[in-house]
Length: 216
Image 1 (cartoon, rainbow, N blue to C red):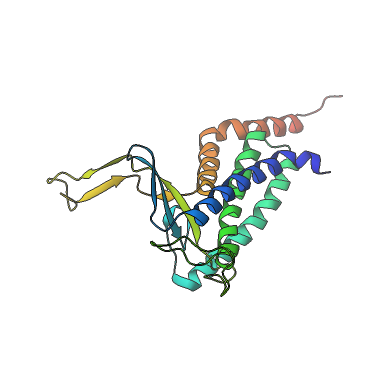
Image 2: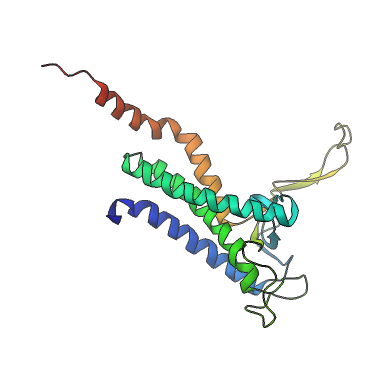
């Protein structure tokens, strides 16, 4: 029974395993703001915690955080049923993988929100978070922060003085700090947009074949 769902199951579990291994390592070994340069100044590991949405965006305080977490949970359940539907309908394998990447990314960030606040003490600029502290974690269920770490400020400089409004202001090209789950979501969406013609051509061809008139 589960054999036909093997592709999405493997995709989801692979993304979750990689995502959570990275996050647990960063949370357990880095203080907030710790920087580790990978390649020069444009490729870094920078530990930060995001109380809101993907790519460092925030949303409406504690109540907004809870609403966002509940929305993510609902979206994951909807994603599971949608994957089941497209597998049963024989959609393109590439499309199934992309939807699975999006689902896995959403689920990866939900795990942070649901459990990291319970399992860890507060991270700070001066100390690494304690695992299972005696006085409890820093937040309740679905109130934890998402761990982000990948930072690629490819170019850093100032707007030219003649530039309207922002003239002379400092800027960074691509200054978001994100995690592996965010990458999975972005890759899934991006690949669907680029290859949608190929993904949905298979379905259109199948529907045309079914609708072809039969001759006695």
